[in-house]
Image (tube, rainbow, N blue to C red):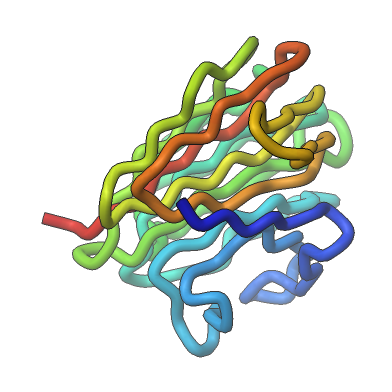
Length: 191
C-alpha cells in the first residue's frame, strides 16, 4: 500500500472561496487540485471568526463537523440548523445558500468535500483505538488525527493531532498506542 504523510506543518493555509475566512487544506485529489482548478475530493479545517455566508461550491457534496468552539447557527433554505455539540455533523450540497451566525465567539470546523457524480465519500469521526484500517483496491483513505496520537504498527510513522496520512489501496494500516479522535474518510469512484 502507498502511504503519504501530511504533517500539520505542511498543510496549506488559504482563503475561503468567498474571501470570508481561511482554511487549512489537509489533503486534496489530485494533489495539485484547488477550488479554482477543480478537485475530486478535499479535506480541510476552517477557522470561523465572524458571521457570514458559506462559499458556494456548485457540484460539490459537503460534510461538515464542528471541531472546536461553541458552534454556529446555520440559516439553510429558511430554516435554522444549530451546530453546538463537539463533532456534530451536517451534510449539504455546495450550491446551497447558507449563512452562519456564531453562537459565542470563533469556532473551527472540519470539511470533507467530493465532486458529485465523480467521487463518493464515506467519512466518520471515530473515538478510541483504531483497529486495522483496510483500504480496498481503487480506494483512497485519509486518517486525520483530531486529538491524541496514532502510530503505525510496522513502521516508525507517528501522527500527532493535526497530522494526516493518505492511504492508497489495497492494504491496511494497523494503528497502535493510545486511543485518539480521528477522521476516517474513504474515497471511491461514484457508481
